[in-house]
Image 1: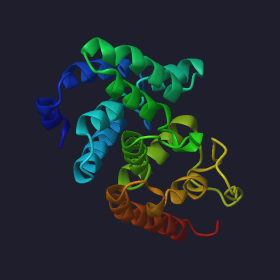
Image 2: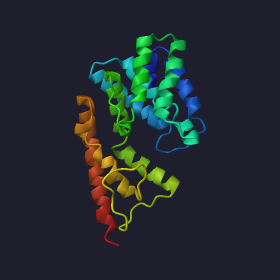
Image 3: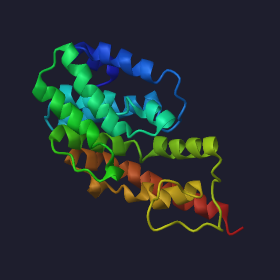
Length: 219
């Protein structure tokens, strides 16, 4: 479902969406802007629907998963941890019960795959899958180069070989694919639905990197 359809069937979604829009109003990170949140939400909706899981929990968690990302950019806080705590305060004011709130909060706390936390619920697994899906595919490629342009990272350089693991920064855009993006393989997703969704996206990234390197040459 798209956001319009979701708002028609999930209580308080319009209110949550308004809060999310306000949080991202002056945030200009091209890799984690509000459009990323919307794509993750649609991914989560599709996974939850196909897996016959709680759609309301999955969508709420997805919409709010990066709510503290702008604050992280300013202060260095962990946006996953801070977002989880924020949700514990926010959702009860909308009438959600403690079980719902706790599961959504924990899903947000564990959504960073690089953080090494294993999701403890189906909602958490759906959120992590939905978030990681946006890191592969055509839009993901655009995100990598957009962010690289913002921070001044070169497209590619034969002087910089990829590292064996990702340390938080890559010396070139192409290195970033090798160090992080190409490790998001379809079989590493939690749900069968996400694994199937990941297959074409992953293949596209592999083909892109191969063609890029072929066209770049040896200079």
